[in-house]
Image (spheres, rainbow, N blue to C red):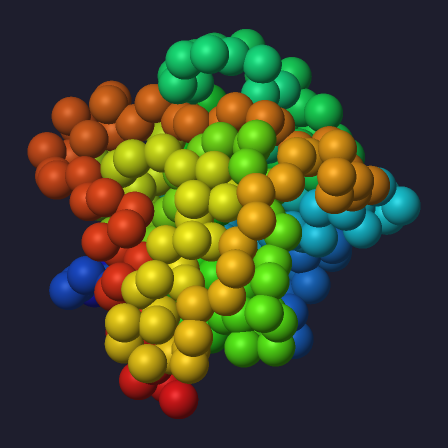
Length: 286
């Protein structure tokens, strides 16, 4: 039986990793109470105690806008923690799987970003995650993803469901393009890459592309179809300039996942299909 440390088990990806654990793996779930990721000595102690075969670092500082005023904390969790894991695993057979983000890119490309494309983060959050990739090192498996959602937890889908119940009209940004990602599919890919045990940078997202407006419209249609909302509100496309935020978002952040899919030899499920699955789970949770 192999041992995997799984951080961030209070979050949507951490829960998905535990739920999709393959046979032959024993997971040590680590939430904030069990491990403070801003404490490198604590990371060293827990790795030394468990001697894991794998560390799935699903925890992160993800408050994109708040990071603009908390850069030190964002860097401590998103960059110094993977550095501490890498140091603690050095010389052992343990592998670090570090989850990263589309925010490491500047959004100026007209083509899907490949793993080797130059990074140019435009926010504190993106810069901290890029630093985390560097800190994880060449022995790590680094997986970039985008627009993650799951039943329960905090994400765009659940925020939209709440607004759709409360409001008759929503304005949603239509000039930021990316790809939604269901946490369950991402977790399965992380486990799959861990089994391949080939260090490097990989991308994962659901098939297809969308704007936030497209995503919101699909959420309304699918949620109404299964009775999660009583009516479909008016959804109005707006520009990024109409909804200013402290952190700059990439206007185009579609990730090229062809190398990941070829390595794993699996199917690439469309984001709308996975959205339906997520909403069915959300309804089951009440």
